[in-house]
Image (cartoon, rainbow, N blue to C red):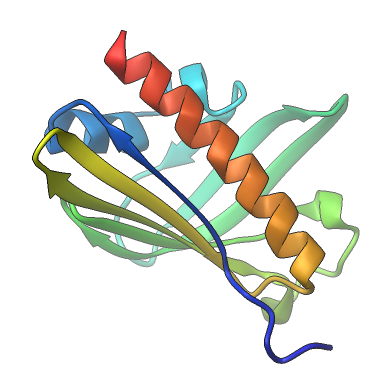
Length: 143
């Protein structure tokens, strides 16, 4: 395996206050509107579980992870495992996903970083998915 695999990263400037963007990242009802219909379940408390359930490319899924860090209106960091990968449910097959918010003059800069990718192509595919999700978020909040 390549030890130099890059993280998947996507970012966008959303013309909305940081509090509103944070709510959109953490409120299951809003998440479902921009995150491909995903049903999110979590308390967002550190150490607690997080699940994402829905359908992707015609296949049902229930991804899971744990909340690693929650700094209100600034940072969420979770682990993430998807059975759709076909890989065993063991720690080395979990990604880390970080959602970072930074105030900007015209709104809020949102960056999602996904670590522990198995290959450069996985990182590239994941970055494209996160770019689509952030594009949907931006469109929803700027309407």
